[in-house]
Every structure is written in C-alpha cells, then in structure tokens.
Image 1: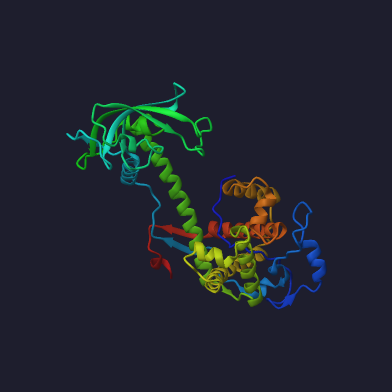
Image 2: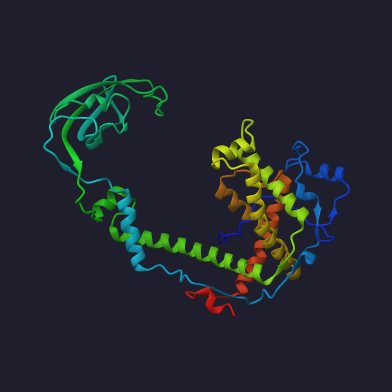
Length: 397
C-alpha cells in the first residue's frame, strides 16, 4: 500500500453519537468512565477520561455541505523537477559537506588558532588502538576537537617536529575500553596551513567516492534526481490535499459546537502536557523554557484558534463520510496504523494510541476518525479537477 500523506488533525479526541449540534451530554457518566478508563490491555488509566467523550452532536446539523463533487482547483507550482534544479542541488549539497581547501604557509611555530597539518598515532599499553591514527589531518588549535591536552600540547611545536603527548581519556568516553585510559599520542607537525578563500570546489568522481555511497558524479546526480522527484511528489500531494481542504472550507457552512471546541482544546492540552512535561514539571514551566516564556493563557488561545480550523475540517469530512456512506476498512486501517507507528518510532499500538489521546482507548478512537476522514478526502481529491502551473485566482470562477 502506497504511503499516504494524511491531513493533520490535532491530537485531541471525540466520540460521535446522534443528537442536536453540541447540546446533549452523556448522562450515564459512571458507566462511561467504567468503559473508557481502560487501555487496550484492560488496565486502568487512573480513571482519566477525555472531555470530548462526553460531547454529543449531529454532524448533519453542524454542516451544510456545498458542492464538493468535481471542484476546480489550481496550484501555481508545476511540480516538475528540472535539470537546473538537479544540478544546483547536487553541487550545493556536495559543497556543504566538503572539507575546506587549505594552502601552505611559511609559519614555523604553532600558536592557538592555527590550523596544523599533522600525522598522529595513539597507543594504549604500547599498542595502537582503533580510530587513534591519521595522516595529513588538518586540526585547528583551540577547536576542542580532540581530548583535553591534545591541542594544547601542540602549542609551541615547530613544523617538522615529532612529539609524544601523554594523555588520559575522559571517564565518560563512549568507547568503553578507552574510557579513563592513559594513552600516548605520537604527533608529527607537518606544516601550518590556512583556508584558501580562492579555491574552487570541483565535483568529481574522486570526491564522490570519498564522501558518498556513489562511485561517479553521474550516479550521484541520478540519486539527487530521484530524491528531488520523491520530495516533489510528496509536496504535490500535500499541497493538493490542502488546497482541496481550503476549497471545502469556502464552499461549506460549518458551525462548531462551543462545548465540543472547549472539550477538544482541554483534551489537547492534557495530551500535550502528558507528552512533554516530565518529572513533575508543570505546563507553565515547560512553556516558559521551550516557548520563549509563553503563558498558559496565550498557549490555550493559540491551540483554540488552530483547533477551530481543525474541527471545521473534521466536521466537513465527517459530513461527507455520512453522506457517501464511507466505511472503515479494518485491514487497511491496521496497515495505516503500522505505517504511522513506524514513522514515529512506536513498537506497540497501545503506546501509539496513548500518545495521541488522553487514554489509549480515546487515542484509538481518534485515529480511526482521522483515517475515515482521510478516506473521504481521498475521494474528493480524486474527483476534483486540478490544474497545475496556473495561478489560483485564474480559475476561481
């Protein structure tokens, strides 16, 4: 199954039942809590319940659908990868990863800030260790690229000089057999060099072989072409779906129930806090540290604005689901969940659902909603008359 680009619905949850638009509440609260306070393994989740679970509405009374069949959509982008784009990307990407080009100087004595070309060999207990040797390595003194004492030990050395540096690896060094170990680096200062500002980068087979998994420039550019085509295809699908959503929002009339909006905002904040605040950290503390001092009120206001647009989109797509009689295909849905779990690094479905809901059960309910709404969007997109390379205002009539 082709990996799809899904519309982004904020991670808040809702269960749907028939009723007036946003006016009814579930009466049997005790029974609702009893069924919803368990995750997929049947374990209690501290009797927590998504606030949106208690909101009931009739989507047909919340949405007046416009003509969503055969909508005319245009996007200015042609979504075609040109030869010029491939050439530019290939060269710039290679340049960004290229090592500086140095030229020799006449300087003879090493000072802090100098770049020295050195040969070195590291030994532990008289035997060379893996990764401890190199030839013709350009090291800037003071860059702290090597362990403590290495760079300082070269200050004052003269070009052509060979010296031994008796050093100790840090206790927390990631290579365990070197952590805290006493070693000797034998270093030869070949020359003192400076970066050559006039050197021109040359993209050739030698560079490609030394710096990429490709063997030739031609192969490398073919890889760049494939990458750009894949990225462009994803951009095209994402932009197309968003353009269709934007058109739906213009052609349909939506009334978002106040109680649903408030509940979904509260649930999103609960989920956000659960996923980001650890070790007793409050939401206020997290926002202050990670969002440039944003207050909880400002955060809630931002979430409410975003959630309103999300709910408008959801309700329109739910109305289309209802009108078209779209049903959830369980096998396809499970494949979708596996793709999402893989994308976000989840090994267990329960953990994936828990991260997207107040509880694992509410998270699963919401993901099922996301999936079936996207099936409705798929149908609208497939039925739309879409033109690329034309400014949107040219076919709005």
